[in-house]
Length: 139
Image 1 (cartoon, helix red, strand yellow):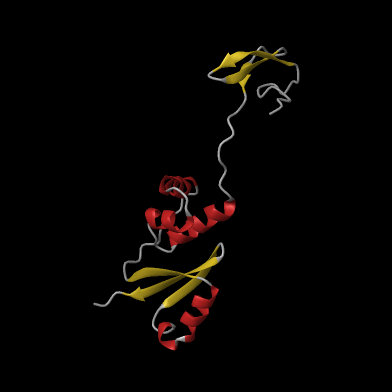
Image 2: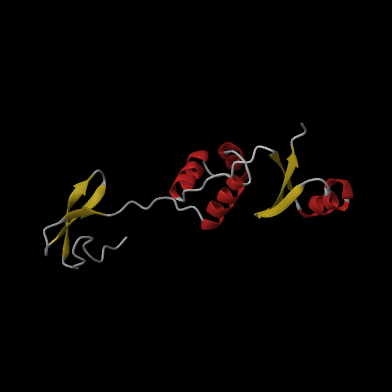
């Protein structure tokens, strides 16, 4: 990775100045600021962040979302905190979900009995589809 400028003053007069914790250290000749290369972390695609937040809002737990999209439940929890997402308080409905491929989804939706009496949403998960269904708790 090529260092182009000092992160403090944006000047390009920088020189190598040793190694700290196996990372190259640099010195800015202009402002005498020492810095090292920023560690490149693993970036998760925004598509998965959006899907995780949608599934959270649909009532799935962090661990259920982890099993579905393959992202750590801790990351999902951090995203919920970062974007200040709150689940709506509605205890009368309980979401259930099923994951289908295209042909299974078509066959499932042919049955009219599964279409009545509940709210339903279908969302894409890569090459599969997730059907989320809300049914009222029976009193």
